[in-house]
Image (cartoon, rainbow, N blue to C red):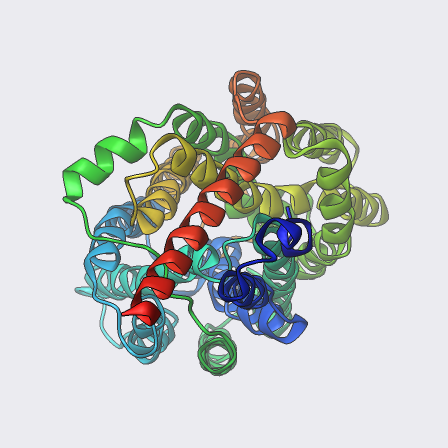
Length: 491
């Protein structure tokens, strides 16, 4: 209920009316606030997209590492990234409130170091011995610093406003900008290094320079976006307290809807990550589009960007659970078509554009559903607060760990299949492996996730009930604070 609906009930209490109107005004976010918040999500997607689509290619064809060592780097980096998420979540939940908030200091301090480590990932050191250690160190370092940015940023959603509608709206803005970030990451990395990545080029000198230029541009954008977020968002001080770490883990992981949601998106994300990590190789090696694969990736991301407003409308009209089913299932036919139809560039562009519509749902829906789980947790555990960062960090932990496993296994599979670094052609076993990695395996994981989603308990009816209960809790807090103010004034 709005303040206008309760005004008549408190018409004899002007102090409470003033408090309620101030409370409602504070929880409303301006368009500028939402845009500044959304821009802060771009660095994670820009760097993540560049690493996801191109790091495997870079390690194999530019750094010219053996596929076995490349698989170790990819697995260790993503596994380490996964481990850092709950650790940072714990540290964030224990960090004190400062003049600029609890989450924003983490973002401010981690940004310059993250930018430096990201740049060094794309630098080929002038030595062979120890090259693997170089990439593992800077990849893990960047992932740690990126986590120090992204976990507080994700949890910041709960500190923008206590109103569910405002958080959902801010999340929609964020998802739109993040998908734009994937477009930007794909465009910068792809267009600068795409032609240079052609395996048959005689020398790696121009390729190395192209990767350095692309990483430099991305680093500048990273700093700019972090600055906009820091200057344009004000963190609201919530009723949060520090709890014991293991007690927090027990409460968070013991919440049934959260556990099911994590498992659902663990499998669906695993499918999309396999597709993301191997699609560039599939386009260049199997389909033979060595000079066009970067444009195909760009088409997918542009399509996903255009589809975000549609999915936002769809989930408000039909519910988030239905949106997950429709969005994930819509990708399946096109994953089958891209490997079954004879190689044709124009058909591939069309299939990629339509598939991008389903990819958009993978960006929007997980982050749109997490606040619902937090609200459900608050209703069932009203006395337990301060776990927002743990909810977000453990969700990211499971998806990133799965990503590390998928990238490591897929690169190792290419090694077993006989992948030739910078080869003009690949063995038939490599082509078959890539088809399995971009079609059969993603489809299987998505279907498993959708089967588990059937038992996910938070539907629209339960969401509305939780929203009503939280509003009553906030109204009760307003009554209590008003009474305290009146007593203070009397004294």
